[in-house]
Image (tube, rainbow, N blue to C red):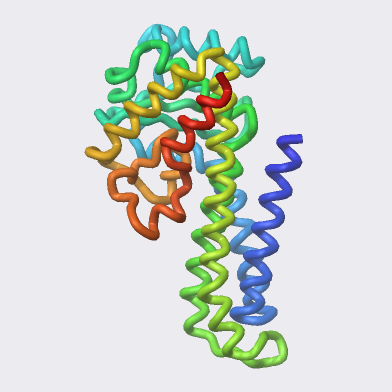
Length: 276
């Protein structure tokens, strides 16, 4: 079922991208958009995990180099009936974590050194359970595809400024110009909605997996507090949705907060409180 949801979203966003290409540049635009979407989906499906791990200089670890973390993940994967993911540690003092990979067999969990230093063992377990919940529901791929196509739609809107409108393949110029402002906004809202819902689901999954919602509540409080005063060295807006706490939390204000890929920490803690 999760496979079907993932592929349905990929197809829906791809069709939206192709349709918008047709609005901008007629049949030629649709063809270009189709080729671009196919290429982006292929890259996101097969190589996005490698790209993001390399971007954050993630170091692979195993039972010998990170025995405590490995033991936590092994225990939780057995409980969740998941294969053991690849494990990585990011050399950054800012506490955070994310999961990536296209399916169960190609999944990876990465945590920063700061997270291991700041949190207790129980809180680390809650964070890892959150990331494993993302893996179980294929959230990594969904988030990556949504972010990739949302960015592509915004890029296409800018590209559309070079085209005129009004021929037989396109609507009149006023409609075209209006869509060039509306479509990037709509794509951002779709990405935001998908990401926020998935964070709530992963929080609940963590609480169910550990049996202790308070562990994740405590972890989120610490992570959020730290994120308001510090930002990861290699933080990238295109990958912010992947982390358990938005790396740009300290800069997330005014209208920008309305389009954040994460719910507020207060809202997440309240929902976890309701599970007790």
